[in-house]
Every structure is written in C-alpha cells, then in structure tokens.
Image 1 (tube, helix red, strand yellow):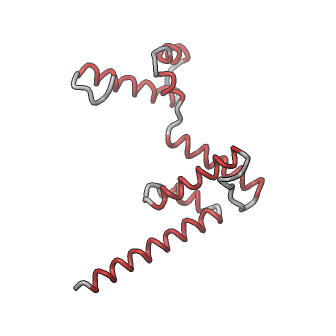
Image 2: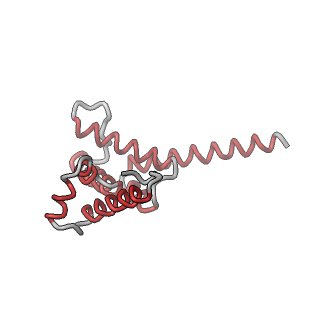
Image 3: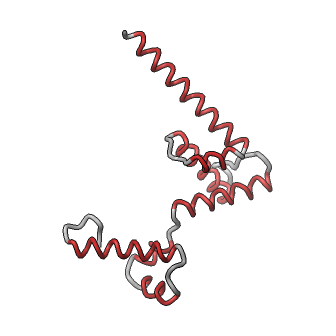
Length: 143
C-alpha cells in the first residue's frame, strides 16, 4: 500500500502501517504485535531501519568514541579500516548538511564541540559569507 494511491482504503492502510512502525520504534508495541507486524513482506526491513535521529545519535556517539581514542584528528575516508571510513563519510555528510542549512541548531552545536569539524564548518560559513558579498557587489556594478 502507498500513501499516494487513488484508493482511500489503500492510503489508510499505508498510514496505519507507518503508524505501527513508529509505535514499534518508540517501544509502544508489545513483542507479539511486533512479531505479527514483521511477518508481512517488506515490513520487517522497514522496522529495522534507523530513523534520522537514531542515525544522528549513532554517528555522534561514534565520533565521541573516536575523539576519546584519537584526540582531535579526524578519521580518514581512505583508511583501510572500514569503521574509520564510515565515520569519515558521516562527518562529510553532516558538513554537507550544514552547508545546505539542513542541520538544526543543537546538531550544529554538538558538531562544533569537535575542533577539527568546527574548523571546517567555520571555513564554510566564511566562504558562504564571501560568496554573498561578491554576489552583492556584482549586483551593485549592474546598477
């Protein structure tokens, strides 16, 4: 069932499934209900997927563990260690999200506690400011 179906009963079923998965993720389904829901094709996979907030917390936890072990040296994407590669990709993705304005204030604050990450964020903020000033100056030249 899909939310964009033309059939009202299919839309309602899709919404019900979404609600049940949400209830599962927040611990509001008992074991039997969870087991029964997981029996349907495709539902178990959706139940196991992490939410965005879970992925954020997991990445932040790994970054904190990394700093505890390695100090303020960032993980490398080209490392032979897969965990290091994965964490480096997560950091890169968060900086991309920051650049696009898609990180919340708390997430920005949490990332900024890591000096090497904060430096990259500040550098990008500075570059965005310069870019804005250049565009503004170019606009003045056309007047």
